Length: 103
Image 1: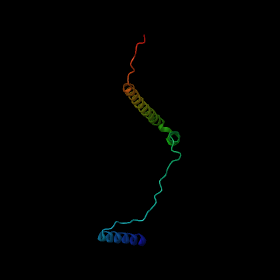
Image 2 (image 1 turned 45 degrees about the vertical axis):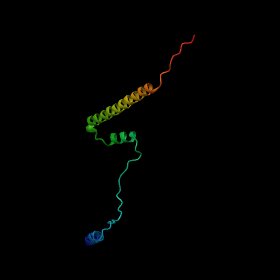
Image 3 (image 1 turned 60 degrees about the vertical axis):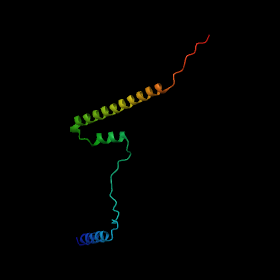
Image 4 (image 1 turned 180 degrees about the horizontal axis):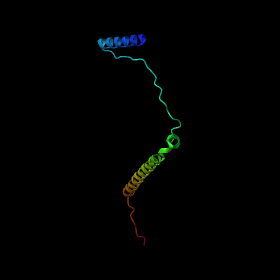
């Protein structure tokens, strides 16, 4: 407890000195561990969810899976529409070839 109090007091003193001298406060770097699931693939995520999801809530898991499928279909449809729009604009931008009659 004394170590925490002394570090708090020294931190407050540094803050006060920094305010007085109008310099930036430099705090020590404290690394914080963050769990990262590797590999970050969609298949890994699907398998992870299937293993972790409680079996008695299987219906809610299937609802989640169906919602994900519908979301992906919506994205696919939006991309398809965008492709059609770009192709149409590209056709309209092409100069029309003039037909010449040959005698």
